Image (cartoon, rainbow, N blue to C red):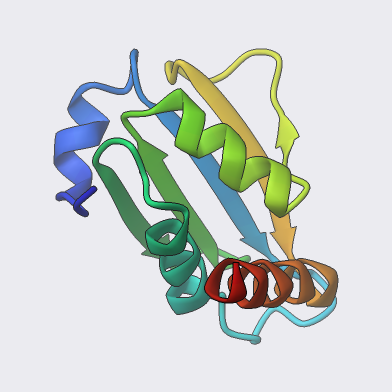
Length: 117
């Protein structure tokens, strides 16, 4: 499915799902794997619209990926070992992860496997 403006999914956040990635505290200047995450979402063939936003002004750079589909959000979260928050701040569900070397490796492996399979 297509990428949409962040505002579109933000407005429907009570029914949308978000996966939030925080920069690695050990290497805060390291770039977020935004392009790889977007490639992974495309390879997963999202079954609904999604939006991606980054915030590099914080102490830790952060990437936010919102999905209309719980299925696609949970599939992405499972691949990158994101943890589900029990109480989300107004989102239908929210997962979080750290953008560290281990996560980058998981993303790379998933991209390779999805392209081969």
